[in-house]
Image 1 (tube, rainbow, N blue to C red):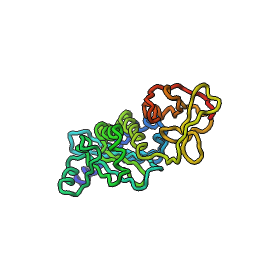
Image 2 (cartoon, rainbow, N blue to C red):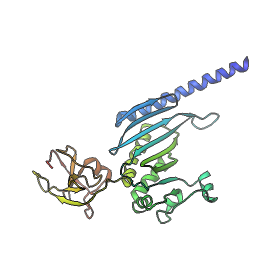
Image 3 (cartoon, rainbow, N blue to C red):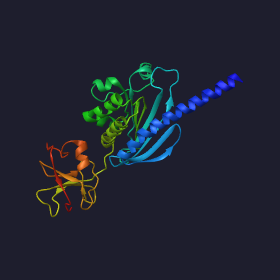
Image 4 (tube, helix red, strand yellow):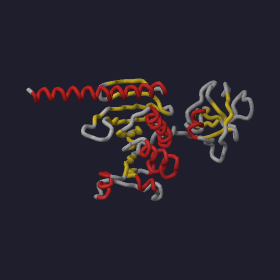
Length: 284
């Protein structure tokens, strides 16, 4: 009887503690949802799931709660998984990046884990186990230091344990110890840059033409079969009467305002423009 009572009491304590962890998680993720385009799709005691967009791509976010008993460290862990769809990624792209430490380092030592060199043997190669079997998987890492830095930041600042690209999905996983609004927002904010490196809409031809009724020298980048006006960074079409366009202050090429904020400079090859002019209601 006494053992049964103690077991029941222990179960109640666990349930109450798990409920506290859930409340903490919900409070944080409610504020994350309010700051972005996310909608809740499920909410249980141990997991909360959202769907939304990141950088114009469909995305999903799942945050769980796990108790850590008999530990001097924080009582809760928040296993987090974030996914971003890559609809234009080459089918051959397979990528897996993990920390080169602990069991991962042991797996490499015994020859059970693949480790490709993608950045000339720099610290990026030394810190991670990189499984990148194709040139399409290695090229963005070897040629773009900003992509390597974005990935490094995920592991360094946001407790990510693994980054994977497979079957048209970018996925990151990690056991977050301190769940916070800025923590989640910062992690999610790095993903569009990585997604863009592996997911660029295909184009057939590239031309530049001047839009109609332009209040000054403005140019649009075009590509594809329909010769439609497109953003030179994300390659998505502009459509009619775009309200959120800016023009490079140096060459005058139009670009999505959010794309310029992400890239930080003009994406046109050879142009070193950094500043922009705001353009409202230009007719393309």
